[in-house]
Image (cartoon, rainbow, N blue to C red; front, top):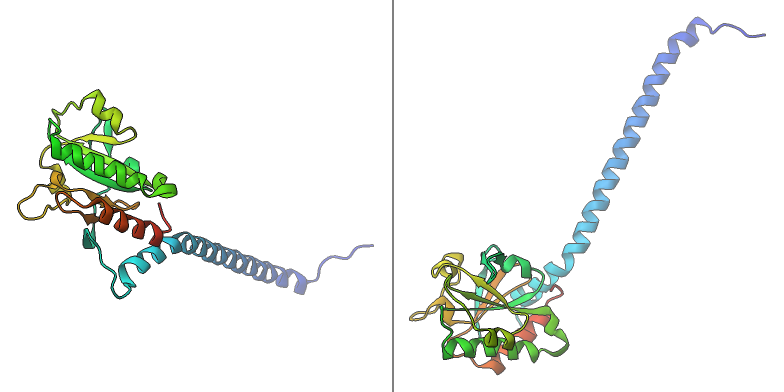
Length: 221
């Protein structure tokens, strides 16, 4: 035999439902907060190597540490530098993001100095040994440049970017007094920041030391 709910039961039921809904809402909010905290923790873990490497190299500077190349402080972002490849397709530094990049420039005709810079970039990269896959090369040339097949074969794997003559300076590649941006060899980090500028007719052994220090201090790229 069943009995009908009492008046008191009928009055209390809506209040109980409201309390249950409130508890459910509070539980969902706690889950959302926990989810956000987990996401923040994951982001911090992912960013930690980047933060640590830059803190080590740019902030903690051991006594006696010197750079051969001119160090840019603050760094200059050049990741968006772009033009076209030799085939006319879009090409730029963004496609090399995640790697350390040695950059130089040249005119329509690559003269002896230009060829020497390309040679230095290739050799310095090779001398990093097992870390050479962390280093790429980019050659920025004028729109009318048509490098010979022989020259390109000597520098296999190097990205060639055609861009207007003033594009490097406009992007932040500021040359030393009396030189042009394309006369230097530059180092761009894996995040697309301009890090070092080497003097005209740079010393390859000292370039190598700089690059090895960067690769050792960095946990990115």
